[in-house]
Image (cartoon, rainbow, N blue to C red; front, side, top):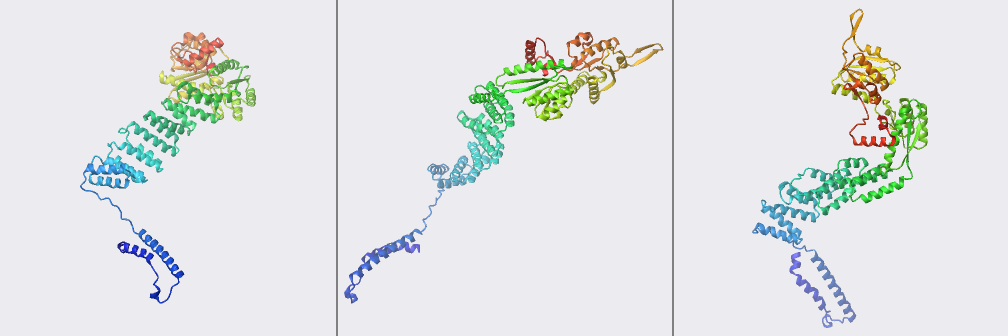
Length: 602
């Protein structure tokens, strides 16, 4: 029908046009007269029919399909000519024709050096047409088949972008992890890490994203760094405090570390941990003064000061300032007071007040004092010191939910609860250190113990025996003595093996142990050591607790101590540490005397 209409097109038009020439038959031919009004109506009807025929004809023509324009390859084209024609179509944005010719080029010249370029063009066309999977497949052909091509780095970036655009975030990470870095330029590596970081942010892995953006930053140019830094800051803002602390400790880049510290300060502020925030921000300002967030850090620090200046912390100080342990309590108080002075001089800290309570060396009064401090709304409590006081105070502080740091040797005191802490050298710590040194450093394996029959002595004697046996040593002799005596000859002789020379004469044999442990204070130990020498008990090591580290011990038994004494200590004034020297200088300047273990630990 299409051919008939087409061939008779002019005839149809002519027929339609002839409607204009239609006339009614003359009167002579019809045999009767036609009124004029009738003739006008007929002519009007014919014009309407003409319009209907024209519309019908045009509608038929619109149904005729247009012939498809098909590109016919020219097999005679040379390689260069074919590629050039494809390029011309590509740059003129005639993508359909360009795609056909590029594909023909791939088929006719599979070994050409321009194959990667052709694949890159094909991929770009598919990208333009929105056919992302087809584009990605062709980029992958470049990566897999032409890894050394100059187009490969760009193809890698395009694949990552395609995965990211398609929501395949895990594929971005896994594909990137499998790629070699050696053949890729810094610019491409930077782009790759940015895309990986973006994917990790979608996966809600901000800590991983921070690491990726940090790597991207290292490899980026100056012009790209600002954009990367924004992504870096956004990812850091999503981190928890624990993650920020970890990354801060493991980051060497000062710029990244600065972003982390500033964000850590912000996070602490949000949780109302203003002291921690101030510490972090002060450290940030001090260590990275040229960082771009320094002004923000200073402003935040000032805001913290405004919020906290009117609310100083109060620390409870619970010590035996009178009673039988008063000598230790007053020494500890000096250490606490010096610490407060030194702490207050450091910039960025909120004011701290001391609320001092005297336990009077009484456990019941120590418990009452804790209740009073809780009512005074203290932030924490330092002390007490004696064992019984410590147990009573720790229970009250735990019940009241106030942190307490006791200065006691009481074993397992921190098991009272998670508000109870300790800062002191315990009996167990001393014994473990002493035995380890004696056995592993000095090679001693056979021991004797001479101890006072009181709580301190019996506790240390039992701990020492247990630790020696646990390390494979032996306790050959163990004797106690009355702590009220000043002559210890009988107890010392019991440590020795006696044999009979005649009915009226005895003599001591050489001792079969290598060391004697004497857990007592200098006043008693200073009397015992010379008596050991008097009874010919020589050439054995003398082991003592930290109480032996005193001038009184030296004054009483100096000539018997040289080269044969091993003691434990938690504080050594002659230490080369700068911190120890500064503390000792500050203490002596304020109090006119040298500090000891109690002052230092307090």
